[in-house]
Amino acid sequence: EIQEVIVTLSKEEVRACADIALNRWMIKFGSVDRPNYAGENKKYLEPEIAANVRTIVAEYAVAKLYKQPFTFPFYTNEEHYFRKDFPDVMPCYEVKSVRTKDEIPVFPKDIRPGVILVGARVLDRDYYSEVEVYGWLPTEECTKDEYHYPPENSWRIPIDKFNDTIPV
Image (cartoon, rainbow, N blue to C red):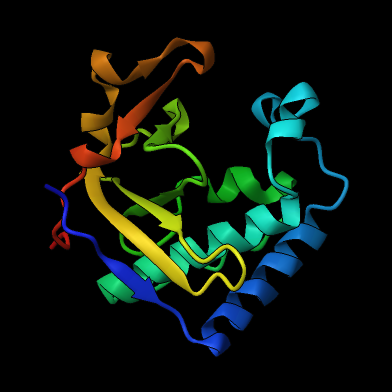
């Protein structure tokens, strides 16, 4: 059974994350979305600025929990190629947050040797101050056939498959 781990952020921490998210949204203003974020799919997604706040808050919460440096995710889409191998949280943590599902999505671009996937959910949707961290899993373990999700050629990892300790 997974042990529930809740990370609480102060108002100041949420503000800092929201500032980063706003700047990230502005620098990507007018950029072209990947297919899974475009077209008809948009009606199922949260507004881009809210998604940015949620994502940054989740990444920051993992950095706070693991006591590791947080990577500043602030650059244009054209610059992404040069930063694609930078982890969300140092030294090797890729944070995936979910809103509604009980599975964490993993895409082929996420599978890299030595990278650790961390699953999370922002619980407090009004103030973004509480984040549940499900745990971690080496990305190499995410490609099992049982997790495969053919519509997106990706994987969906059930949250009960994550290790609930802090990786060392």
